[in-house]
Image (cartoon, rainbow, N blue to C red):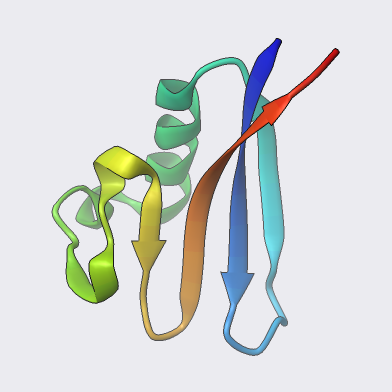
Amino acid sequence: MKTYIVNIETRKNDRDDVLGPFSSFKKAQQAILERKGDWVLNYDEYDSDFSKGKIYTEEESIEILERELE
């Protein structure tokens, strides 16, 4: 069974977090929106792409990672 987690890492590693697991990629995206706000939808700096589940800023990186559960 596929699950998705949201991995949040800060530059200083002082506020790292993991959200999930979520049953779908869309639910993981929703968790990012609830946590960070709508600005991530159109953010494209540092090769960020919300549709691919990757947001990179100067302070943190947020990625949606797929995991397989047995």
